[in-house]
Amino acid sequence: YDVVDNVSKVHGRHTFRWGGEYRRLQATVTNPDHYQSGNFGFDNSYTSSCAGNVSCSGATGGAGVADFLLGLPTTMNRDIVNAFPQTRLTIADVYFQDDIRLTSKLTLNLGLRWDLITMYNEANNHQSNWDPQTGLLDVATAGNRGPNVPTDWHIFAPRLGLAYSPDNGKTAIRAAFSITNFPDHYGAAGGTLERNWPFFEEYTLTQAASNTPWAALSS
Image 1: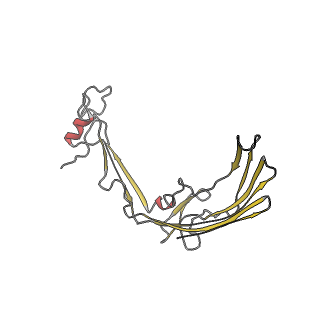
Image 2 (image 1 turned 60 degrees about the vertical axis):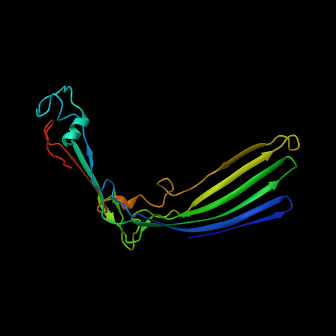
Image 3 (image 1 turned 180 degrees about the vertical axis):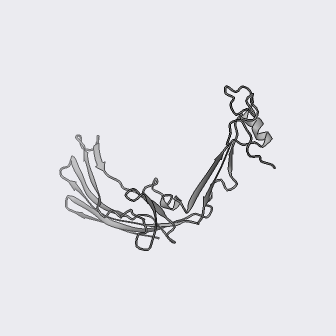
């Protein structure tokens, strides 16, 4: 859910704006497995001139498509998510801005915003994080839900700008500077610590001996 409110007030040369927002987000993954049926890689290992020869090098001929038609993969991998992640976080902010019309030609914009972006929590604590101090993987608990990632309570974002017109509005020169904050993982509401072991597992298998078939697929 999202609660937001903004207020504007004009007073003389000033235009004041202030407000805030509170967002409670949850991202639920209903199909977390990647490559549920496996991912298979094919090259020319088993149809080239080196097929079946472990010590052979400089292979000629063969094709990955031919290996595929034979059902002989070179690599296989499978990702498994042992849970259905329900990651949650809170985003809140308050801001204040004053647009000051200093003269008929120059207006300044001065503002400050405070952001709160909590670390992702998972509804059932299905998260883990590697601790570089101990070398261990810490699983989330009721008292360390992050885990080991504290919330930053000191995120401030200034807003500075100006608008200048040297010829009574025919030309406008504008400049601005600001800082914007958003959650990691490209602003998404998940996709971080819930994808660690033991909740996220990835298995990769490769041929034990070069040019030698080790697994076969069938329709």
